[in-house]
Image (tube, rainbow, N blue to C red; front, side, top):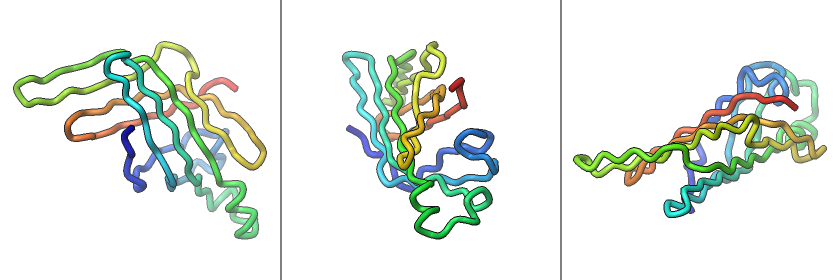
Length: 137
């Protein structure tokens, strides 16, 4: 299991379902993934706060905190493994062809939002990139 740094920013602006103001920030509490190199599988799970001061600005601090608690889940088969033997780098790429293959959940009301995720992960640097595109709910 690999832990992604807490300061990782998942850009969800433009995702009108989870970020109506189009001006949200993510604050991760936990973001980790499992890479099964032999089985060609990657699984990402995380808990985060989706901060939306515009849409949720009228809420009390306790209400705002409740509404902004989110989680995500993204399982996928690796679509490519690129090896750079000269530099000792292996890049794992996950971009499933399945439409809306991941989920973001709003915890307080159990609302599920479907997303198309793509990800890449490099070893040994552990450089990680995650992209999310709003899907059909």
